[in-house]
Structures are given as structure tokens and as C-alpha cells.
Image 1 (cartoon, rainbow, N blue to C red):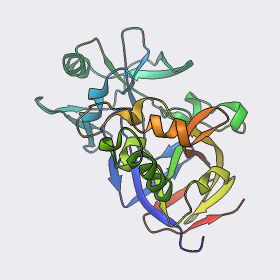
Image 2: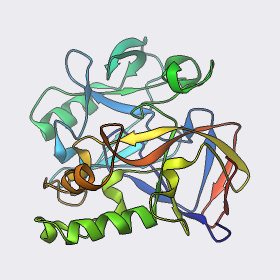
Image 3: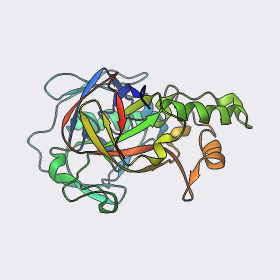
Image 4: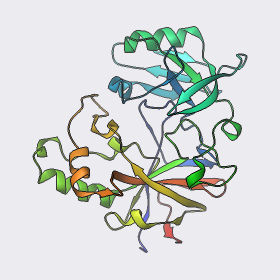
Length: 274
């Protein structure tokens, strides 16, 4: 694939909130710099995501200097939150993983609780290097991840989305398509590949950074959520279940683990190493 390249880069400062688009991003061992270092939890410390509250998709967390974030949402006054520096870490739960995180100030809890209509707290991961190991079945000792679902980066391919949208257009929920790539909340999007070619990759290089391809990404209900309106539909899960099931799971995209730090830039060439 001599013409394959990186076409888009995205980070999600707070898990399940709106994504940001970048022309370049630094790669850290646990993911892109600034990606999913914050998360919402309930009173029991369990993660809150779009799975339970689709309206989190409408909240923007924009970096505001010094590690702070400025939050905006429809019908809400903006809120600036600084990284909690003095609080003691406490355990929170993300999909069965117990992780140490620090709770942000009470103003953040009040803002998000009012917006979601349920008790919610904003927490910050101070050091991903020691906080959360990657699933050992698909990683090496020392691999860590932030508050992403399970792996440092998620890669998707434009050609695969085009193929999926073709299936949607021919199915019973054609009016829902074509779907944009933001439904899948990737970090890296690549152009110039074949449809579903990424299913067979094992090791790749994008620009100056090499990655191990850990596993295909099994999809949950989040891609059925319109990221601009928070309205849920039937697609893409219906078409993925019919046309792209592998090992009994509906999959789209590949989870990546970086082999070393570096910088990714839109336009970087993609090379398949294995």
C-alpha cells in the first residue's frame, strides 16, 4: 500500500466526551498526549460513558492551559477545571479494572451531576505509567493505558468505513447512513488501504512511530450514537453484525500499542511491517 497515509488524528481529553482534532500529536507509552486522562464516575466510583448517558457526547472539554480543561455543553455555562493536585488518589472502576485517580473539585461534580441528572464526579489519572496495565493477553509487561477502553490507541481505516456504509445503504436502516468516522471514536484514521485490510495487520509504522497491533476492536453500542445530537439508531451494529463478524464479535478498527514515543502528523505514510 504505497499510498497509505495518516489522514486524521483525534484525542478525547475526557472519556466519552466530544473528541478534538489535531494536525499532530505526541505519542506516549499509554496513548496520545492528553487522551483520556480524565473520566466521569458515579457515587460508587464506576465509570460513566456514552453507553449509559449518550448526552456526554455533546460535552466539549477544551484544553485551557496548565493542564486545565474548559467544559461547554448545550444550555450550560462554561466551566474551567484545574487538574487536582492535592487530593489523595482513590480507587475507581473502569470495566473491571481498579485504578487510582484523583477527584476534581466539587464544582465539576455539581456541573456534571446537573447536566446528566445523576450523581457524577470528574476524576483525573495522575500517572498512566503506574496506574493501569494493558490486558496481559494482548500486551507485554510494562504496557500501560489511560482511561481508554483497553489499549493506548485505536486505528480505523476510511476504506473500511466506505465498505460499511455501502452495506448500510443496502440494508433496512439505509436512512441512518452514511455514518461519519466519529461514530467509532478513533485516535488515528488512515487512507489508501483496502477495505478491512487492517484486520490482518500485526505491526505497523506511521511516520516515525512503530506500533504493535494488539487486537481487533469489538464494538459496543456507542457507535449507534450520533456524536452531534446524542440520538441513538440501529446502525452500524446491525450491518457489522451481518457483514463483519470475526470470532463471533462485531469488529471495526484495530487497537495499537506504541513501541516507542514519537510524534504523529497528518500526512505521515503508513507502512505495514507484519
